[in-house]
Image 1 (cartoon, rainbow, N blue to C red):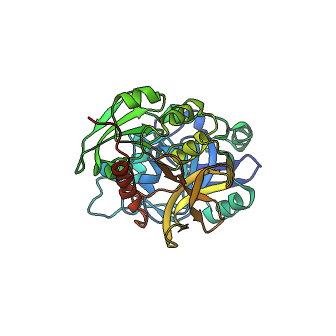
Image 2 (image 1 turned 30 degrees about the vertical axis):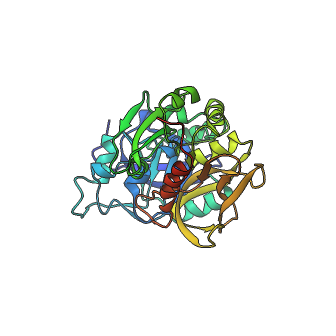
Image 3 (image 1 turned 90 degrees about the vertical axis):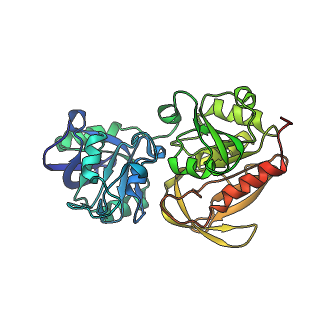
Length: 368
């Protein structure tokens, strides 16, 4: 169900904070939407953010004030549908203008069943989340008492297997656009732009998160990719076990949640950041070259520095010194916490896909 015109709505956080706005997008059941409220600082790419499966269970606050001004199009979707809990914006553009647009963001939200709230003082909200940390919330056109009660019991992503909600149901193939490698990609919530970059290296078989290491190796891959995805890495016991069995058998490359899973398979620990890294301008130092990369990021959890034996720390976040990349000393495997595909966003880190190609070339798997 959708609404014909915006009506007054409220956003209530679990600590009781209240923000006034207007309802946009689809009408949720009971006129209440709940989720973990986070903020994203990108200036462009709202469609890619909304359709990124890594936001499952979360309500996305956009800090940039004008959202929707260049419209939407089918090419920029990162997944088959949005998995986020909802969106919060300061101003939803009434008119869009861009030669690539074939629709407007408001209509897309309605068509995809995503609820939203506009007119929010996102500066105040962002400062509050930055000071107090990401927290559950509820928004909608229901009365304040109903929203307050819903926010108080709204769930976070802690301890939940969010990957099971976003992974593909069965394996599928993405054709090569240039290379001759055979790559198996674990779909933990994989983004379409990642597949575009990987396809330049060869044919990709995308498999569900539940796929065993034996089944992967039976496909005869040159390399295995561990994708981004939503939520807490701790519950992903089976995925870590599969990765542990793949170590030393085939070259591995992980991004975001895939980075955390690889770290966990190596014995590493993870922890939750206060309000996460969500944006397109995070500075990361490459400790191998000494250069600084501007990166796109989207994660709430982070690998604990010093918790993994027998790895080299390759990248560090210059804002808070958190771990951004590791390379295994004993196995052909590496990973980064940020998004080198960055669609749209900075291109500084796209060399990592070339590094994956070099890793596969230097560690051939068997003789075919």
